[in-house]
Length: 253
Ligand code: PEP
Image (cartoon, rainbow, N blue to C red; front, side):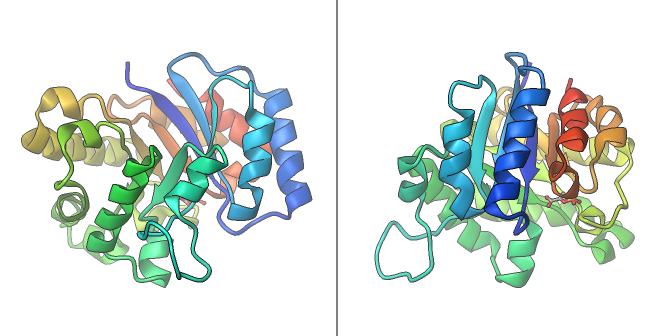
């Protein structure tokens, strides 16, 4: 079975003390994930080391950065490199979140560069894709998301591609309380898998975990995750409360 993942995206929320408390609560109250399940905590840069230390020895927990530079090193004030992340024990990096695409003008090409550097330092990218409301209303979401994959991923070898996790996050469902239905999620995930299969073959496509993101919470996680091509979720708001996020984790297949 593909790895089933509950990934938290704290975004720019919580103080250090609040973050510490949340991780303590998660680790003490959640059950140990089974071997095919993983909990990934996507936290702000200043908290990465703290979270990496806390989860040490806790099987099934990993830490993720929410971004990294496309550059290896050098005079890029304010940036954080992939190498810096691996040097403090970070395993994952979220790339291409719609907020970064929108507010920081991240293009498909820039994301291709970020993916390359992340992979070269052994980070597992969680590559986000997803359409805005206008595209969904025009019913052109399949080709829109296909282009995102093609322009950011298709230069990768099959071996590299298999190291990725993909997160489908329809923008109209992020932070809005409006969730895609489980069937809408399944339809898009099956489409994404077929796009990957056409390029890399079904065996490769079937190995890639595809997460759904967009107003996932404790009460809807299990239904969405029960769909055959949905391998867990990338969770914003509901990852900021331990009891809510634990329900999401418990909803994994
Ligand atoms: C996200 O930030 O990736 C996200 C899906 O947010 P929310 O769960 O709050 O919609």
